[in-house]
Length: 479
Image 1 (tube, rainbow, N blue to C red):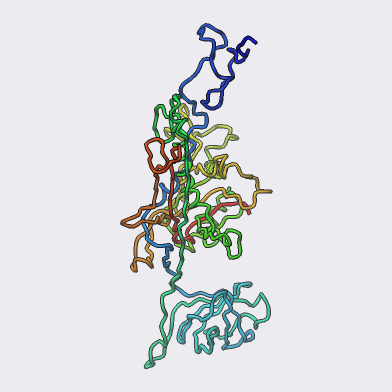
Image 2: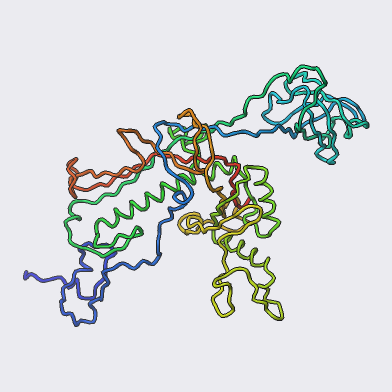
């Protein structure tokens, strides 16, 4: 039988998504005037713009080495003493009373004989002032009231009788001994452990020998013809994003959980810490000035940090812009004669110039600087989650981060140290630095470490994030 050529492929090409020699993309007609010969662009079109989302920790934190499996630090407790679940055994009008402290976690009260206290009923707001005359047990103390009418609230017996007590001073008679006992500083000890992150890119030796270059531009500014290394570069960018998002999203492995049983420890990420030890706004987005007054009032009761950064999604960013714009009388579209008095925008808002309807910051008790957080907007990350109030319980819309640094006692160093409120600790020593490791294995691409006919690019990092003073952070979420 006489041989013959297959009728396919023809010159009606079907381009392949990958640069692989297939029947359907092999050119057999080299007539460059043929209408079916495709025009090609060598350069990739960046249809998604900058695809990386890492930048948050670089903006607000720092990185420093650690040589331990655990990071521990002590944060200062409150300076003054206050209890909010206190009941009295005396009836209204009594001159003396014994009060019992039932606050959660309190096993020994820091109240001493001779101290003066204010006692306020939590329900009615009526208060007494008294002097401590005895401390009979670890959680009770006896007082003598200063008021002639005695105790102003009823005897213990229900929620309406629960009081708040704080110490405001002391009083002693002439010629008496000094204060009995002393108080030790109250410190809270916190810890976190680093996690190991890994990734890998592999390409076989045959594909490395195939000529097929494509001009590319990557997010870090690199350009050129990198064909088979382009995926490696994107693996690197993806790994760098995961380094940051792990520090944001990580959670510790709970006792009895599948991860714990598999030998995993997990870690305390920023969202986990602020959810558990920080302030949480559960209404999704604060949209009015009274909402922000509530937040400012809470910050007053915490560290009262003067400057704070707001990292927000697009919805919260617009809500802040709209709130601030609405506070300006000159911005009302309903005014019969516009005053052009808007206090926001470009070029002093000249009526013939462009108007900028966005804000980068505002002051309400404290300074707040607003920045869009790409991680919360990216559709492949948190930006792709359900954002409606009705169904999005737990969906995060923003994070308030105090600016500057704070002083903590480093348990490893054994001394006080200045640290940013957010910072990353990575494993390192003189012999090993695990901040960001990358190495090549295999027998292709210059590597000669094994008989594998491929080049493997390996990535590794071991790190954790330290969230100091979580009581100064505010997490904005639904639910």
